[in-house]
Length: 368
Figure (cartoon, rainbow, N blue to C red):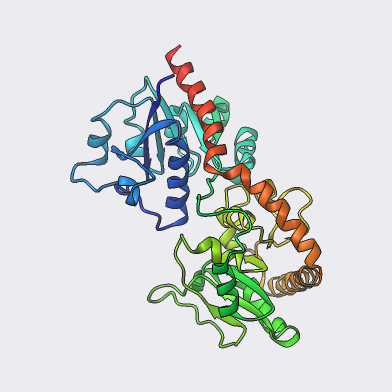
């Protein structure tokens, strides 16, 4: 069987680089697809073995460049202009978010990153804000392109490099904090735990991996010997995460209840438990019986008194879970081994097998 030719486009970016969670997710999907197909991002051949994937910027418009070559499969995320120009005699894939009635109607299939998202689309859940026309027409094909784990992440990376990082950080127990430190995304869990840890567990260290944002958005971290700032790039991430005993993921850093969260998958691949709020999409990665879920609720719509009471309830729950995690190293190891096993589902090879089957089926359907 000949290799498929696949066109990909993420928003209006002509040269896609791993500068955000969305771009990292898209590059991961393209890496998986490149195992069984010739992938072209914005008209440029994508080769994950080359610097920047071999991608280049170009002067012409995205639509003009897209039309220079014929493809078997066309995929777009959040660029309706180019999507609506895709030819009707080929497979057209539209990323489920944002919801767009015209794009949903034209799409051969809708793409999601979790089974939860797919199921909720097919059920017409109100939370997805689907247009009435979409619900009346019935659900089109929906395929799941799970987020792809980078090949940098290898199970239980307890190497000399990880050991050196632990020694530099110090402390007997290290909590990695992933997520924004912007004022607009105040780290409630981090701030709730910090004074309690300083008082009762002074040797515990918080590894803060996300530096404060740009001008006007800075969040001033409290001065504390418990906080260790650590800057690292994507290649170093597996070793830094593996140096932690636990990763704390703020609610906002998790994204929506139905979408993917690559931070969770990466921590799982390192065998490091995560402390985070429950959602159906997170359960897909961590498992139905995962013991360290929190029942955290959104605070935005609450009145001030109720908000303060909910923050206190969440703080009590977090402290209880954290004490259990710290006092039961055997449970941590057991959970870590299961997480490593779960993470294998998200490797490029496994994702490629599922995507190859789904896309070949769609292409065959269009041609028949």
